[in-house]
Length: 447
Image: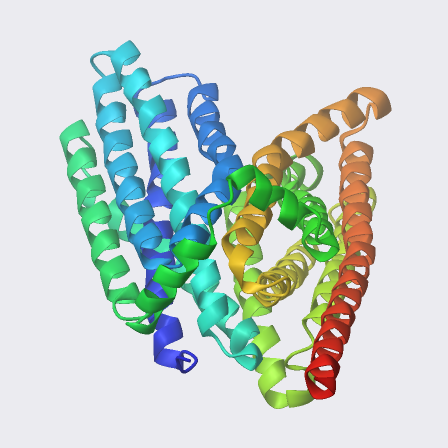
């Protein structure tokens, strides 16, 4: 059996997430702006393209099943990143093409965003499975923090350097920058996964391929029949819906109720992201200071959900009180609580992925990844739709935003209850496996 990953090994795997984040942020933010501002295209076009990227995530369980059958995750990580890199480059080519041939450019963009969605799903699912299998249980919360912070670092570095290199803007420069980002991302991927699985996984692959001949449908039914896997998928969907629903309404809320300028609302978002990074760092930091709390991810998950609900209730109160309320502090608190919840949820995902046995890890992680992506895909739309409906009914921006934030808080409270629900299923599953082992040992002793 291979030794668990060292801290350096965890950081190396985080490089893959850095490259993944670099490509995704360029396609979802920079290309979005170019289409709307420089090319004067309808804002719904980039919105629809990003929706395609999320829609492709429903195939994550199938890609996870593919890596289960092969028993090796590295080819899926590298292959997925290659597809993502190609999709990111083609998306830039398509955007440049829209300036002269809009219809052909849009057609190519649809293909490109399909590749982006497929690449993210295939690489991301197998990466998390491999990280979970190779990381010691006591380090999983810290590993989740490292990997996600490195992905956010990819966002920050890419937008900073790309913004510098894109001035003065031209379609050719856009294509060149995108190609460079894709090449760097592939290089980071090779550095990140080189030798991680080792030769031992090759022998395991032969045995696993002989044993695993079932169809994807059978594998999915098997995983869905596991109470803890099914319940955790529902938990991920509901909690991520609450997590993402405020993304598109926070800045309009600050402008409509508090009178913030566009520049001030942009700074408010940066305050929230700063709080998220701090919240992500707090979980492993407190775990290091208080070792007894290190492995109790259930407590962190429930606590993160409840704390996020309290922060959202604070925003709901802010909408009612108005400009005298400390809005920046409340938004920062929301970021901290969301960050703590996210790290705990990802750590729980890594812990549960092997709880039902080793042969279906990819399908389980794919199921949860699909639930997360679908929730993110509809979260922003649901949040904006809810605010519009509330404004129509209540005829007051402040009351409408207050009601939407309160509803999101309710989703987080429901998520906390679901986290306990998942934990109970996990305990019953572990107890059942323990009884099976005891009966087997007794049979051997009696024979």
